[in-house]
Length: 104
Image (cartoon, rainbow, N blue to C red; front, side, top):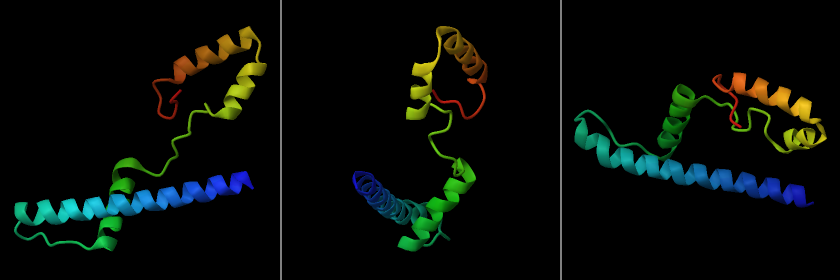
């Protein structure tokens, strides 16, 4: 039951954040763009959400932020490792640190 409440709360928080961010984007667009560019039109709320999605696709992609394996499962595994295994994993992660996806 607690897990469902957590997931519902997280979902509601994400929706509220998207709604607020879309309102901010719409307000900034309507304030800045028509004055800077004579041909620019004002946008409504749905166009602001579309602009957010488009910018996310073009600039950020849709990968998650939990990549790299450093969540709770990683730390449980870390606790079960011997010091030699930890050293080997640390060296492997140091080699991967320059690559995209390792964030811990």
